[in-house]
Length: 300
Image 1 (tube, helix red, strand yellow):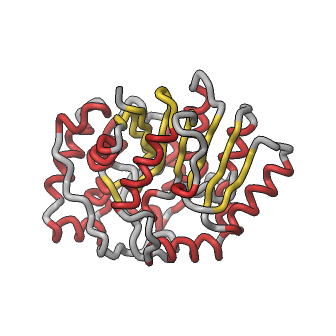
Image 2: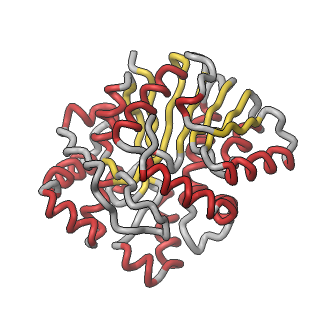
Image 3: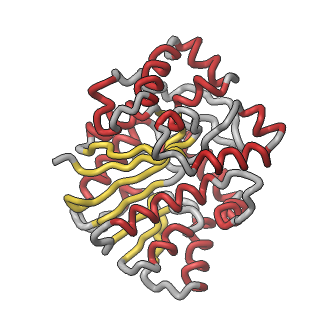
């Protein structure tokens, strides 16, 4: 996988802000939506539901909270990251919790072969958006070689469908690109309750973003390109790598446009957490979430 400006910007950002990110993941303050915590809870629920989780790999592990949490279940747990500052937080946390089965490795996913066909669960929170489209294809292909036949691949994405409802510069971008109607068709299909595994039978994925697209800044993250995907686009990329998408889980539901979050962050958080309790019964909340968790399994 070749280095890109996007990768370099991501490394610089997370290396400099490692302390802040480590603190944010562990925060119990519900005055703001803790997206990192919601993502970790989702992966933990998958790990607990597996018949076996002998080997777990978290790619882009950050401060190592998830690796250490799953290590408490037993089995070998590995965190991979390219930011040494993040890995140091993970090692310190593992030492504090006396978790010798939590191992932190410096590098990129393609640097490691942790046992072809032997890994039970692979996760990647906050990673896919910082990879190019081709790098994501390589990542998905790598994951498919590492997993057991009944293993699970789960990761987060920035939800491109939310651009329709944010009514801001992201909406303008989709209108100018001529993709707004494609996104609306997919959003309507999801709101009607289509099964996640059948989404490619119901809609044609919109064109993927180009590598040159510069995104408006969000959340003080100084990375110029952070790719966004719709569920159907991700299902298409997963299918290319031999996966089928089995679940889409919203993990930052917006009760209104981002202007509410900016003006009344506590109200936004309160309403968002309340809606989070109903994601299983209200599929349209997928379209109202700026971040999604994806669950995939090997095609059989």
